[in-house]
Length: 276
Ligand SMILES: CC(C)(COP(=O)(O)OP(=O)(O)OC[C@H]1O[C@@H](n2cnc3c(N)ncnc32)[C@H](O)[C@@H]1OP(=O)(O)O)[C@@H](O)C(=O)NCCC(=O)NCCS
Image 1 (cartoon, rainbow, N blue to C red):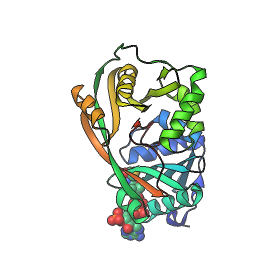
Image 2: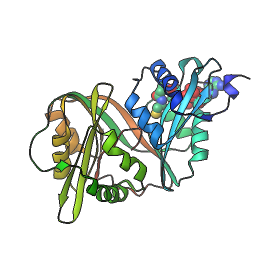
Image 3: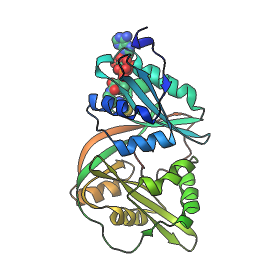
Image 4: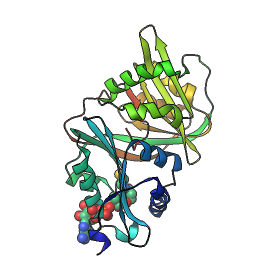
């Protein structure tokens, strides 16, 4: 049987090395920390190449019954343009079982997703640079266990789906996770996590821009950083430019199915492009 008719199977953490070799084949990083988190909160699917390696992958992360985030759509160069990407996507879509799907598309993936019925809803640019370290404005405080219900409630309201498993994993996944509280409870939360030697700033969800910028400034570490900024947040683009960050690449934010009832105005930075 040829790889082109091979079954799509659910992968396990033992397949992590093969996923990383496939990613390197497409000039993506090894992203060990990110892959492990994706394995822990979602379903990783792949097609074997018949020689102990993977021909392709797709990750599907369901958030309750409402939204599934699709990511890591990768096909080895030696198998590209033979329908494997489409087959992996259709498998993930058929198994998602949610009213909507979301993803961020590279220029390679976008035509494929459009053909499958995804709609472009925005653009996201990764800004990269060096940070001088956190400011000590004292607006934010380190997260405590008692903040978690408040973070979960705010996240569900703003993201438009119940990401409980992902939210519960954030204190371990993030290097830094801070909150802003007022008398009503948690009004913003923000984190930063390490990905192949660069610290990705996100998630940041907050009631207003002032709170969001305070979170960004108090979670950034010294050294190389990256912010994946939705173009609906020019104030974050302004912050990145003032801090000497430069645009590295742009992806298209896409949705499928029912329109997602999220609030992009308060969704300042994603956890990761792979997770929304
Ligand atoms: C994006 C990606 C996953 C697509 O995988 P793929 O297996 O080549 O995808 P498909 O073969 O299903 O479709 C790709 C193209 O091949 C064409 N195609 C499919 N079967 C074909 C066949 N038998 N013969 C010729 N062309 C074919 C499709 O029509 C499509 O054409 P288009 O892009 O001009 O619209 C792959 O290019 C990749 O891994 N890129 C790098 C990583 C990346 O950017 N991933 C997307 C993340 S959002």
